[in-house]
Figure 1 (cartoon, rainbow, N blue to C red):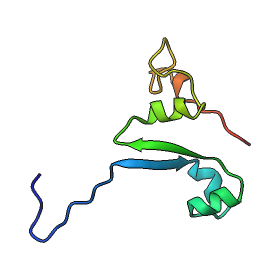
Figure 2 (cartoon, rainbow, N blue to C red):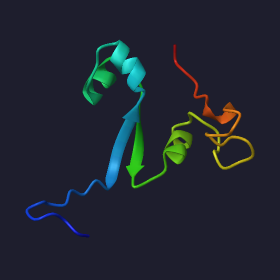
Figure 3 (cartoon, one colour):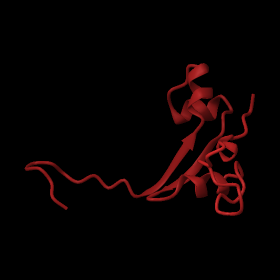
Figure 4 (tube, one colour):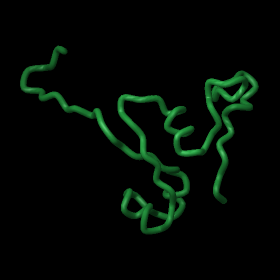
Length: 85
């Protein structure tokens, strides 16, 4: 890789987590610890990775590569994620 002079590489590979930012924002929460404390779900994910597979592993969506489950379908049917309202 080419880096600018004096710029260090940052390795982002590894275990990360994701959460519903809308629910946290409405509750005024801006940290993972705050999400846990408020009982909001935080799910594991992997970088590099595929967010559809992370959503599937968390049980949020069905297999995104089976039939008509894929997010981004022209009719939008695969784009609806369940909410915990």
